[in-house]
Image 1 (cartoon, rainbow, N blue to C red):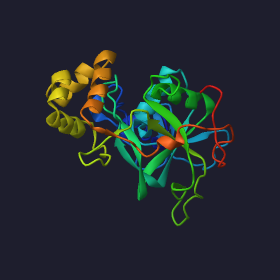
Image 2: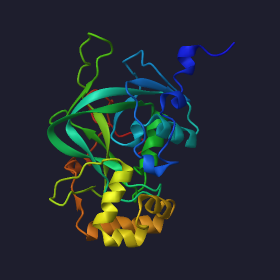
Image 3: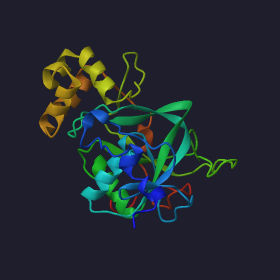
Image 4: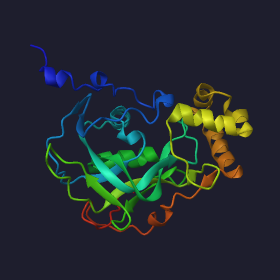
Amino acid sequence: MGEPRHQADRTLEALGLAVAPREHPLVYPGAWPAESGLLDGDRLLPLTHRTFPGRVPVLAVGSNASPAQLRHKMRQYELSSPIPLEKARVTGLEIGVSAHVSALGYVSASPFRAPGHTRELFITWLDPAQLAAIDASEGVTRPSGAYDRVLLPSTGFRVEPEPSGPGELGGRPLDGVHLYVNRHGVLQDGTGTPREHPGERRLLTELLAESPGLRKLFGATPEEFCSRARGDLRLCAEGTRLFAREGRTTASGLEKYVRGQQTGSPGTGESLSPPWM
């Protein structure tokens, strides 16, 4: 007997969510789900429970909201437990552009403070092993890594999970949500305002058109950029320095939350700094 139809139809392939930016940089940040779900291996199943004891809520602003990218990262660390992805309305943040070039071949996303602005993002609810794996993948554990993980305060930021069903009210706003913030800052749009991430192909097209120095390093097209950047740590570091030299970088407004984190329980309003940090 074959698999039940509702299970077979939930594969990432069937849902159009199977391509990972780590394998195809120009699709960054990857396809996000249309709704909350439970990533379980090669499937994205309906999210039937809305409480996640023992898990840490982490907002995804880039490829960590892509099931294919999460699957790729978990396989790298030989982890197979499911990951809940819960859609939420988030006030106080927008998705910007990291002021660094990734050796994975793309210029990634990074959040910036946007008071009063509301948009939909996904919360990834990570168990301790998954959190350690994502921390490592974001460079949190390396002094030279691109990102720090911060705990957002409830003052100035609101994270409200979506309703769990038709006609139901939204979930209670979370207090104690984590977020990855770029140590290099974010790119600005020429006026000093953080620029928004429009998707990788468009972003690289715009950046290369604006900077002869960037074209000299990475070529004239997004395809050349990704090919040259991928796996070349020296070149990526030079590209990151070029962003700064050309005055393209600015603060995200989230830097003040990076330091001084204390131990506590995730999602309760207390700070968290796990022992593997």
